[in-house]
Length: 301
Image (cartoon, rainbow, N blue to C red; front, side, top):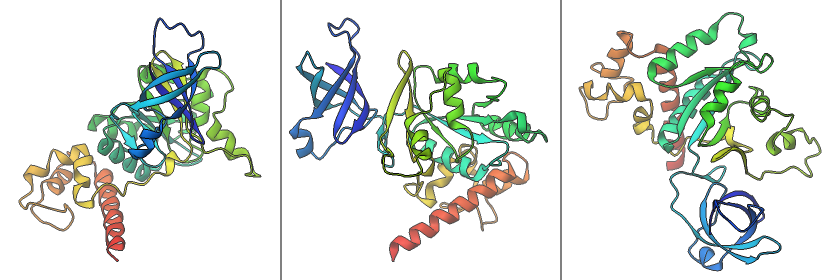
C-alpha cells in the first residue's frame, strides 16, 4: 500500500493511505520503519510518500517498507515534500519584517518550494503601508494576499490557494499564523505547535510535526520552529540566484563573480538606479549576503 506520513512521535509514524477503494474504513495506520531503512541510514519524516505493509488489520498496524523519492527535504525542522510555504507578515504587533520575508523567499527559491505572501492584520494598516509592500512583491512576480481575520477578509481566497498542496505557514511570532489557520479550519482549533507555546511549564510541550488535512490532497503542516530556520545552506556567492529579479540582471555585470556591492560596472546596481529593482530589496540582499559571508568565515576557523 501507498500513503503519506502525517505524524512522527518517537519513531512511531501515522500514515494516511491513498487507496481510493480500500477495504479499511479508517485511512490512518500506525507504523514502524523496517530495519533495512535504518541500515540504509534513512529515516521517514513527516511528508514522506511511503510504501507500507499492513501487519495487523484489526488494530491498523503497519510497517514502512520504502520511502519514495523526496522532491523537497528540509533539515530543520525535518519535513519532506512541502509544495507551498505561506509567508505571513503583519502590519503591526509586530511591524512588517521585510528582512525576514526576503530570507524566507530566498530559502523557498533555493528549496524549490512555491512561496505565497500573506499580508495579515490589514485592519491595523492605518498608513496603507501594505499597498507599497504588495506592489513591490507583485512586480517581482509573487502572489500576495491581504487578510483580516477579524473581518474575515481574504480567508476564502487564501484557502483556495492552499488546494492540492502540502502547505507550511512561516513568519515571526505574533504575525497571526494560528489565527489564520483557525479561520481556514473555520473552528477554534489551535494546532499543536501553538498550544505548546502556551504551556509555560514546558514539561509536556511537543515539538512533533504533523500534517492536518483540510481538503482532498490538501494539508497544512504544523511545524514548530519553522519560522526560525536558517538559510546558511545558501552560499553567499549564489544568493543572487535566489532573488529572482536580481538574477535576471546578472548577465549585464561586467565581471564574472560580481558581488553586486563594490563593483562599478554591475548590472544589478544599474537596474536599481534605473528603478527596475526595488532599492529596499537590494539593500536587504546586501545585508543577507554579508550575514552569510560572516557565517562562512566563522566556519573556516
